[in-house]
Image 1: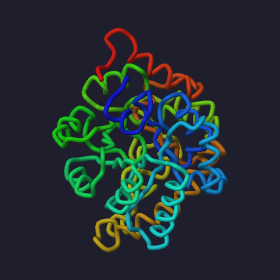
Image 2: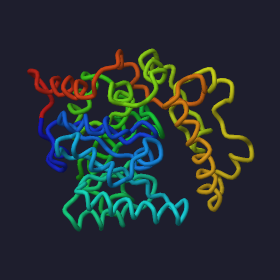
Image 3: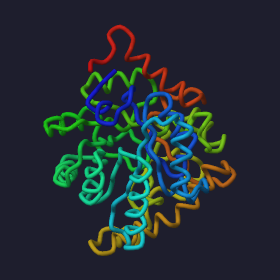
Image 4: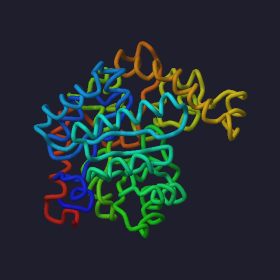
Length: 330
């Protein structure tokens, strides 16, 4: 089951539990790492949703995982100086606590790469197409998280197959993100040539995830056709379950919002406005249930999720698909 990715981060199963706001609680991150995959910390979730001091939260995950590697998510978009300074402090804390795998997104990762490489760590960057991949590689990243059209959250526009063909010649490990909800899809992605898969939706429907039971049940019930894209969370399309609330409020930003989102100088402030407004909606819906009728983020991998189960069991079932005769090649 060894791939370039598992060798990069020192794990057994080429499977990532992606960082999720607000669903990345310490118990979930640790359970995936303890089972041989790797969980990734979402720092805003850790501190502002689940109530942990960042350093103490990282130490808790290290204890629960038995000292197995786990990662850290860094959104590096320059939305505000206050946020950027906070992210720099968070990364310093993560490095001090021994984290050596970082996933960056939405900006130039060079400063993260410089800090992480200085202590022997690796950085992967979220991309949806080649131009962003090339910019990330200019910033020195070690691998790419290839976000396809079936992903939850901020989905891409290409299929997993098309994105792999577009990026395969870049000379770094590629991780498939989107559409992997069952062991067969996991094996198929690795057979295609991906070095690992990043899952989000599948791990929300687990015992360790602190998402509300309404959210988990909605994922189990949903089919791929129930996933729609809405601009009303962050100003750019986000994949969510098409609940009655989503149908009532619509999926497009308002006229003024669309105008501001097109402006070179105003788009970052507008995205920040949307994000701040939606932070509470996502938190309430995820942790307090469907009575709030807000947003349940999920990807088209819901089609492969048929039950709530322990996160470690998910990792073991997926690993077994590779261990079986004819499993994915290293």
